[in-house]
Length: 443
Image (cartoon, rainbow, N blue to C red; front, side, top):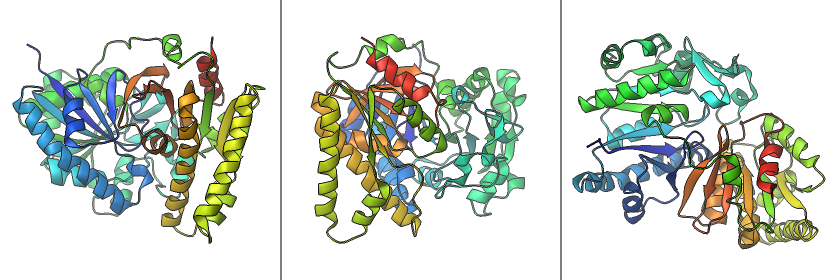
């Protein structure tokens, strides 16, 4: 009988399942929810931690709480014969933003020990590759892109050993970071397993990847080492997950996924919270469609209310005004496109920026949640926007990942069978958002 394997993915935003299908995504991790999820036939279980939206202390607390909940649930599942082996992955952004090394340190404390850490940021369908230790976006060093200028998670080097030194504030020197090259991944399976086994204890190794076959070989070697008692801490983008659990083709093609739209006559809703330049271009392209009507949430106005007197009363007034605009667009037979005003408002501190971001995401979630019973689908662009929509707006304890509309773009179903397209901020080209909307609008 084949081994029953389970890969547990702590996802730092709800878009990290963008290369897989047919698995549960949990937004709660109480014991009952974990028990039910662990008996799901999929070898994958995602826990939507949304830590990128949190300040470091809150992110640490969330990861720790998830690990605490997992310990008894995993022991129980293994004792009951539900699974034979498990791995845990800290799924991080493929453009190197997020709480590294904090999340791995907590996982080590709670679920370790681990022999060493593998850093695998490649996301191949999105053009994120790693070669000779340099992490690239469509061939360009990622530190030269807008993602590296993120005010909370910015960085100055695409060379992963140097990035590790920067993110650990010099506690791990670049010279101590080991590298696993593409050629290392193309040797015989036993040689690759020995290469991993020979990594220095408690070290960090950066892994190159340009082709799926290389990550498949890496995944097989990781499992082989695990069977011999050598466990690795894994920090990766989405593509390694496919190497750990190769999946059959997804059951539904893009047209089949689009037909999951709830009620052909029900309207759709598009929300754009992401503010990276690519999201701006995609929004502009979508709003050129006559059937798509934009409703702009003025970030400066929201900020004045959030950080001013009578916050709750004035925020409720703004929300009511925007809700009426959405209702009008729907009554006229168009698709409302709710978006935050473009550009990134300067805040006085990271804490203030996170607070404003949280309020904006909650505002969008409430607007969508009030409409949800009357919607056929939602397209949600931006990780924080999407997580807040699922958790607070739709109050979903879990969603079921159906598959990808196109490379990297997931469609999930809520318990009420509402399709939600989880659209990463950094995915696609200028036409991708319009393409997704067109597909969901098909008769």
